[in-house]
Image (cartoon, rainbow, N blue to C red; front, side, top):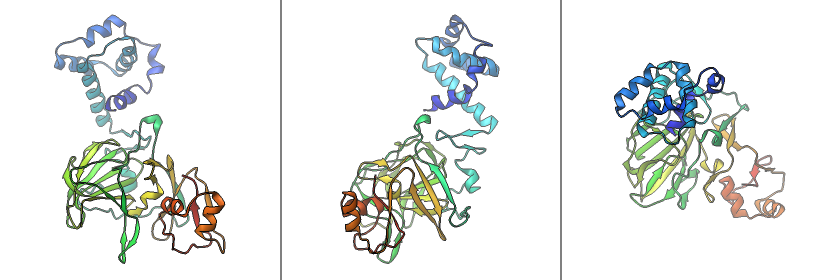
Length: 332
């Protein structure tokens, strides 16, 4: 992934220079077979921009590329990227900071769990966020495939801002999306907790871990192990408490993720600003608008599904009254 990122950064304009300058195959071969890695790195740094671009383009003529050459070229690209202070995320978002989504937060706090950020939008306004970008190899992984034991919402008179997933101590927990670790520390309530900020502005939280596998500032990819499951903090048993937040406001993870199938409901979502938070609407999904006198039973029968499935998809309880105008997701 890092090599792809580096080559993408340096090779953006390779097509335009391909005809102006090209290394001959024997010249490229002579360079890449260098046995001294420090000399190889020095030679690469001595090349100008056009020569680097042409060199990358010429790599396609080789049958084998030595690992030392790949490392030197990748290191050059990374140093060049940092020097130019340009951050191009794998999910297609652009920012002028080394920290993901810095323009949305204007802060990078490695201690405070929830950033105190303005909601940015006016009530009723909406914003689209891309969750998965297969073109740029930005994917999604379920943090842990297990039984959900507690849903998002009110629990025992208190807000439960995430979902609880049953696991055993030492089970690996992985990052849901690409991003950078903002927090990896002990907390009185959450225990050992990791918070990752992603390139689209979302943050995900993983709590009650037994061990850390990352630290603040680490860049992680979706599916990478960030900790081992446990029961640290205020916990009555081993489980993963998983949250999704945007600018500090909690979102129902089930509005983004189909935990039965371990996939995203949609590759993108639309956040609609409410008075205090946001409503999550997956794009490209069919919804039913509740009218007066309707019940979950009637809606389920109308669309050939079950009440249980509707409740699971929408994160609602079967005995909770429906509101006129309420949107019910009917397709996953």
